Image 1 (cartoon, rainbow over the protein chains, first blue to last red):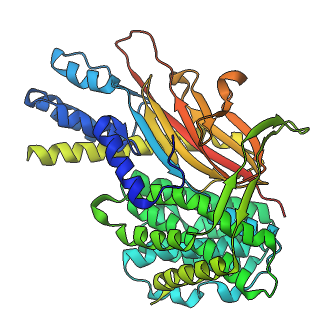
Image 2: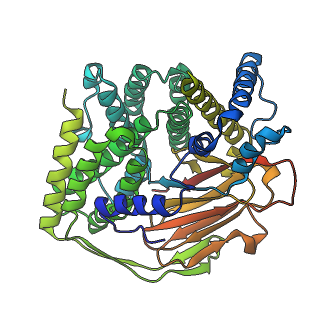
Image 3: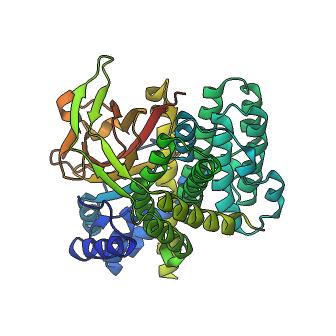
Length: 342
Length: 142
């Protein structure tokens, strides 16, 4: 496994190579589990399909799935052996996970940054985002702003930003995953930061699972990418607004180069029909801006901490110049401006 | 018409499978993250015995994490390993009686591969498929 530090083109070639030599490799989500079976079926299995389809519809009407997490591939007729055989074919799923804006916001606070509401996207802008693309991108951006406000205990602003995300989620048809109860829970727990953070995380988790469940993964990818970019935007703006930015903060900004590779891979895996090409172009610009930032990882060591938590040792040595920071700040700011503009 | 039906069937099945996984996670996995702020990404797949999954995950330094691989009991002891970029195994739950979770913190930010393997099952006409969900909790400290 050597997917680290690859450029977008390299990752694309890698994906193609893997696909060519191992047809059963899957890049994500269960829907691909089903696709190959149908491609390989013969026409004689078609009646079985009809029967299965009818069964599915009956199941939906009945409102009951016999077990919430198990499906049984046992089918008794001879003609379905092929289906059963494909079902037992070994599948390898590959998924990607990047740190959330909440993690970045926590890093900002821990590194000594101050809260500054001027860096956040304006609440009043929310009414102007009408296309699905604008709504998805700004759902990610407002989500990052919401995390930032919550981490810094700006409770009233948190509620405001939550309302913005709710409005955009409604616009994207995600009301089922983000109902009014969330706002009520936020208001009830406004003085308990950990509860607020849990509610925010739960809400975004529900949105993400709902989108994936409804085959709208590209929207999920837009939200995740825009949230990550907003987190980096906040970090770079805070660093540049300070005469003497905290070295820890600079280090954290540089470290985002590590998660950028993973974010690129995630977006690529959801980029059917080139719908996310614009984000990949933007991420390439950020990758270019990170060009001369060097990150050297020491060998990992594993030990048991006194509290029973495993410690994974191995320092990261980071070299980032003032010019690197300026270049990165400029690149991220331009991209983010493009997302929030009306 | 035939193609349309096939596509429709696949779409309905996909939606059902994801919906089932979502319900499974909601009902069975959340408690194990008590005391941690849960992650925002939904990463779950339905796997058969012998199947594997891999997730690339970035972890920040100085954060207390709980990595949870929550799977349906029908799949048996699901094995998971954290592997670094050199392929070295950082953690293997087979050494901890196939525990579903792993608590850790890092000195430096890293991307690791999480490799999941569902054990093979004996020869059987029944081929159970079950949900495997990957959840990440963290403690946010000032």
